[in-house]
Image (cartoon, rainbow, N blue to C red; front, top):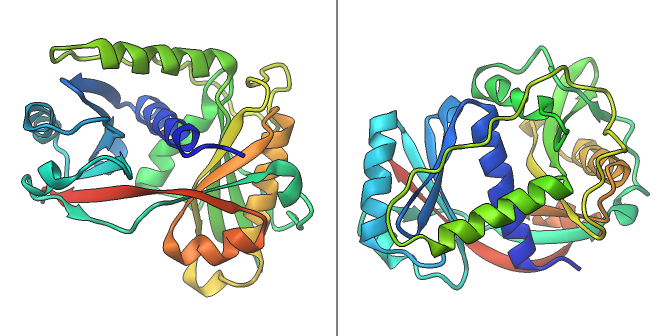
Length: 277
């Protein structure tokens, strides 16, 4: 069974990878660590252990300089968020961290979902972020679900390599040791042509955790098996890449689906948002 700390680290690493792949970066301000997602004009506060005005104020100033339209803050449930409220943040839906063995999900049909690195129907920020699936070694795969000749849903699978996990861990440790503001330079991934299947030679650490992020099914296509197909295909991709479990950050509306497909609730987090428009 995965821990909530492992799920949150995975989510932090995914957001960091997404930022770099889409032309953004990460930076630190005292004990606050941020990812800049340029495609969405969004600044993200990444699971701080402590929140203080000395860390938040310069981070928001940097976000304003970059042209951020919104700021999201992801927190462990044990971290007090009142300092963020003083800056105008408001609480959003509570994240529900769930996990399941990849074998439990593969019993369901994945026929409606497939690996799809560059779907023609996707545009805007979603299209800009498709670059996350083109890095080498591969750590992310984009999936789509289709029915009746149309796109019905999509999701990402994220499986960091051992080298990526080690790099992210070292970077987190470096950030914890910092006692002054510092800008961290991102590691730029090479972008090549996306391949059809996960590369078997880049196994993650034994017993590692893969993540399903951004899973969405269109309102008119819900309760028709497309969400299940995406989860099952995600489990197959993760298993081929060497992961043993899947984690998902379920919204309250997705709790029923995930629980019915073998996911167990392992912890809750906090999400806050600040609109800068």
